[in-house]
Amino acid sequence: MITHQFDTIIVGAGGAGLMAALYASRTVSVAVISKLYPTRSHTGAALGGISAALGNEEEDHWEWHAFDTVKGGDYLTDQDAAEILAREAIDAVIELEHMGLPFDRTKEGKIAQRRFGGHTNNVTGKPVRRACHAADRTGHMILQTLYQQCIKNNVTFYDEFHVVDLIMNGDLPAGVVAVCLRDGSLHLFHAKAIVFATGGWGKCWEVTSNAHSMTGDGAAIAFRNGIPLEDMEFFQFHPTGLYPTGFLITEGARGEGGVLINGRGERFMERYAPKVKDLASRAIAIELREGRGIKGKRYVHLDLTPETVRRYKAEAGENADYYTPEYIETKLAETCDQGRTYAGIDPVTEPLPIQPTAHYAMGGIPTNVNAEVIADSDNRVIPGLYAAGECACVSVHGANRLGTNSLVDLIVFGRRAGLRAAEYSRGASFVPIPSDAGRKIESELNRIRTANGSTRPHVLRKKMQSTMQDFVGVFRNGKDLQKALDTIRELRREFATNIRIDDRGSTFNTEVLETWELGCLLELAEVTAFSALNRTESRGAHAREDYEQRDDQNWLKHTLVYRDGEEGLRVDYKPVVIMQYQPKERVY
Ligand SMILES: Cc1cc2nc3c(=O)[nH]c(=O)nc-3n(C[C@H](O)[C@H](O)[C@H](O)COP(=O)(O)OP(=O)(O)OC[C@H]3O[C@@H](n4cnc5c(N)ncnc54)[C@H](O)[C@@H]3O)c2cc1C
Image 1 (cartoon, rainbow, N blue to C red):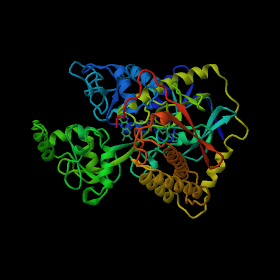
Image 2 (image 1 turned 90 degrees about the horizontal axis):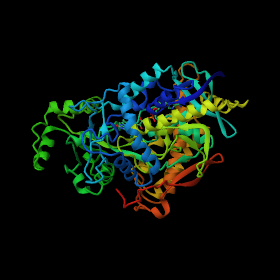
Image 3 (image 1 turned 45 degrees about the vertical axis):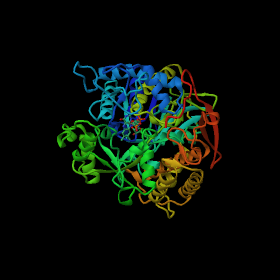
Image 4 (image 1 turned 120 degrees about the vertical axis):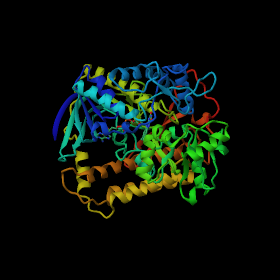
């Protein structure tokens, strides 16, 4: 194995990984390992914006942002983390601006801000403009800006290196093992501090807004090395995914006046408002389940055409003369492109077919507010191991993430991870690499490369995705969750004993690596179904039809799931950090 040594290793080059790298590289040697070219990370797909209570457009306070975060998380949010997120977001966004991020501007030249669901003035309850944005390409701009800064700071990048295991020496991390995609060689990265920033795992589901690479590798690797996963039952569905791909259509489309219409031509959201107004995904799922999709199919319409939008606006007494085809083309340029390219539909003249789409992982690798990975319910820190971004669970999003808060999470906790990892690296020495390091993963990769069974991995992937979609989706119940858990376990067995692949080579062998990723997805799907079955209440994004109420008495706590033996799972709990915001009645 080829060996490299750096003070700090960062796995992942999305917003969280690059922010961590930037900060750590100011004082120690840093390498970023990424299976993708950095600027292809999913952060680049984020459209809507990044929130910070700058108060540039109207009165706002970080305390309001913190409260919205806690309330949006249905009180499962750790309030110390929410305060840090909201307070440090202000500096972090201004810092991005100083690094050169081209934010949109107000007339006075300040960073422009717009509304986003769940962001409120806590006194009046009215929406507040808090989301900072660079057109509808905010994530793209964050990624480009941070990448440039990292290059300037001499961060070493290992692009298209796929990390496949963590090396532990007793309780301490010593490094990671990665496969070089180009030639299949195995590399050992020896480090004092390791930061996981590998993103989410939307690919567990059939319909998802997530890119192909979102396979939860970091969370699965941590889990396989004895680290628990926190709050995995909470996975957010976004209401407007394009049918059939699940590509995200921005919330802005409804913000501009787009209306949701079912197979009977009804503007059905009216029926659900105001109770579940913010949870359109649930309303759409009910319409589809009760057979009111368009032509009985699994989608409803999002109608952005001037004719419809003007008619509804006129009924509401609003003048909508401005709402012309040109207006839509300008305001929703990306959406128009997406409709035309991926659904063959022009949103200016025809309604878009949409369905809820698996979007964001609230759960993940448990960390404290300094991004240090914790090993158990007593918050025992694993020295030298960090996680940030979507793969981590701080837990700042609780049971449901507030729109735009993920980008804030990357910047705020990515920065904390980088600072803390560098500080630790400066004081620590290298943990010796055990003599058998990497053997287990090497033999697993060989098993996959030479697999000669009868089932193709894509068959297992499809079955896993449809199982998760049908039984661990927007609505859940005990019977279906048990069915899902049994099916996923069968798929895992099949994966371990009877797969077959064709490419036995070493050059750009994406088949081996995608099969290995499938193993990660299966592992995370199992933990998700298990955690969802275990939590007998409804909270945030976890909606149980057989337990409809939020149950603070029994369930105001975080779930921690551990691997127990080869196949078993074990559950434990951790209290929620509650400071000044006492749990109030359910939001949704
Ligand atoms: C379509 C879409 C729109 C969104 N819009 C918004 C929005 O407007 N506002 C908002 O706040 N949030 C939004 N989100 C959520 C947000 O973009 C993501 O949660 C966030 O970008 C995740 O960032 P990250 O740094 O954690 O990971 P990512 O950006 O996903 O990056 C993961 C990195 O890890 C690397 N990696 C993964 N596995 C391995 C491995 N095994 N070995 C080596 N490298 C590995 C990848 O190469 C990549 O560099 C959106 C998400 C999607 C999908």
